[in-house]
Amino acid sequence: MNANLYALFAKNFPSDLNRCCIETHDQRYYSWLDIERASAKLANLLCSLHLSAGARIAVQVEKSPEALILYLATLRAGYVFLPLNTAYQHAEISYFVQDAAPELVVCSPQNFGWVSQIAFRAGSQHVFTLDAPTRGNNRGSLLDRAALMSDQFTTVQSQANDLAAILYTSGTTGRSKGAMLSHDNLASNAKVLKDAWAWQDGDVLLHALPLFHVHGLFVASHGALLNGSKMIFLPKFDTDQVLHFLPQSTVMMGVPTYYVRLLQDSSFNRDLCANMRLFISGSAPLLMETFHDFKQRSGHNILERYGMSETTMLVSNPYEGERKAGTVGLPLPGVDVRVLNTLGNLAGVEEIGVIQVKGPNVFQGYWRMPEKTAEEFTDDGFFRTGDVGKFDRDGYLSIVGRSKDLIISGGYNVYPKEIESVIDEMPEVSESAVIGLAHADFGEAVCAVLVLKKAAKLDAASVITRLKSQIANFKVPKQIFFIDELPRNTMGKVQKNVLRQQFQN
Ligand code: MCA
Ligand code: AMP
Image 1 (cartoon, helix red, strand yellow):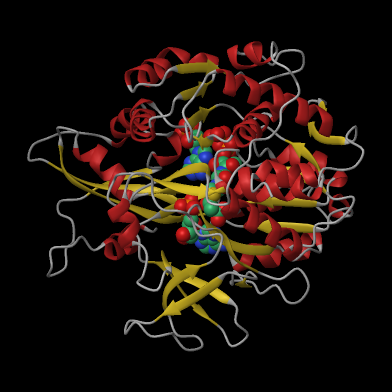
Image 2 (cartoon, rainbow, N blue to C red):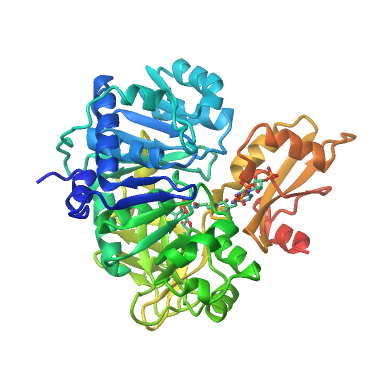
């Protein structure tokens, strides 16, 4: 049997390959046959480059069906897909490319100049471009080269543990870690979610998420691909476009911000959701208020689930049965989730502790960081999620906090340490603390508290302008506060809870 994830998808494609697989917001249509042939052409191109076994293919491109097809082609050819957020700038891309040493880098044409410099300096042999296509214009050197290739390709044989993708998660200590996911990690999770969320004939997925993280690339796309269901592809979340396409859709997935934004639009109502079967939320906590308001306006209980780049999905509220607001639901079948108290024992009902997980979904380790990998696993093989939670008497898990210093803004993870290091490099700054403050749209907003050096002068606007040229825009603090001294506990550790209290209003 071939454990290649693409082989699993292909087995489940509809029998009529001429049916629509992807429809775009600007009325481009891709049949299943188009997907098969276009991914074959790209897979042939990848093979013609004679990359090494297990070569990484780093991709920083705008969302498009072609970007998804490139992912599928990478699977088919047996290479390792490494998606990168389009907001990442020079220093971020440099780090990922040096660390992952991809043999091929694909970027958007407008970034070719600087990305190719980084890639070639890091030893990549090939850099291609892929444009965000509009009608009649979907080019870039990748597709130009692929056009010359055959549209027939036999998907390579993969073993269950062969790597399919590496997803970088920001590091608590500043260094991002590449989570290595195998074909079987992804396949097992896709199969479990197909049943858990009752994917069915006639489903149409409204796909508004970005393609460079687990949520949009795996959870959403895999669900549709495995079920042979059509996807309506939006280039990004746009409230008007979502409202336009909701009546033709049955399933939508999003981060809480998407649901908050839908509720803010007065035209969002039950009629628009008449065809909808399921709204799913994840990547960040869904406020109870959003859950209840959404129920009132649309008639739907949002199904909240919980996952990580290292584990894909581990817990989900049920499709049938109660979806409890404020909880992330029950462990998925085959996934072992436990909460340990401060003594290291299994926590009782409603007792708070650290969340750990074991199962076929759990990753193969961090790329080239064996010590870090070993640290994150317990002796009996459970992965430490870094999240803190509790089970209720019905076995539903709630996430009550994080033991990792992490801010989740609009579904994107931001590690304060990384931003603090960049701010601390500014010559006027003595030290800084980056905190998350409640934000109506993004859930949490990144904010920075700065202590300046004696007699130094610096205003908030200049800090923001400088940061914008150095880090991805979603990591840039929405607010900057100045203070004489950071509050510290007796151990000398900055008391971020005190800062959060002080600046929340
Ligand atoms: C954009 N901006 C943000 C964010 N996104 N600021 C804070 N947090 C954000 N998430 C800023 C930009 O820097 C810009 O600022 C301004 O907002 C407008 O940018 P724009 O691109 O127009 O924003 P948007 O299109 O409205 O984007 C917001 C968004 C987007 C739709 C919420 O961030 C999004 O789609 N988020 C989803 C993230 C996601 O897929 N997460 C899954 C991770 P300025 O104007 O100052 O430049 S996977 C995961 O977490 C696990 C595994 C899981 O469980 O799923
Ligand atoms: P990432 O590193 O991008 O994979 O993000 C994983 C983290 O997102 C988890 O460790 C959680 O802290 C958080 N997360 C994901 N889903 C949820 C959820 N439904 N509620 C709260 N936090 C979540």
